[in-house]
Length: 226
Image (cartoon, rainbow, N blue to C red; front, side, top):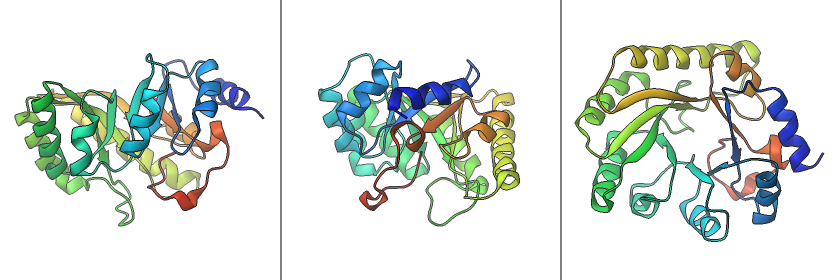
């Protein structure tokens, strides 16, 4: 099927309340243009330089999401360039974001990435470290946490549901607490092979790469986030 047909198929399985984020990392502007013509306005990238280069040559009404591991020395390049950073995963990164966004006079909109499966190969904060991060977020002046992002371990439907449900419980718990600089609005869960399960467990943003653009070259590196 074509990219536009793939988008229609994915959208047919999503409630209107769920945002579809097209994971466009490694994809060409031509492929992204087809997705744009099919109505996509939210694109996800995981490498800063690739994202910035695409921004210069693509539509201005697009929302750019940074979904990869954000290195501290690259934060300065995304100030004012990103709609949403999905990967706040440490106090160190939070302080760097605060520092660079203060310099630019901007407010960073971020999601806290939680390593719900405790996988050493994945980024994300562990649950027992979350409270310390929240304390620092409340002290911030240039960071607004808009929700949570998670990449779960590969597994069967029951395993997927368990991890998504656990993440939704954290999301709901934080939402009830009325914390400073934290509004639990976005629950970014679900990728190409598990997004329908994620939606059934409460996700309101799904990150789809292969399901829109087809197979990608995994030799190009980067944490899987689609």
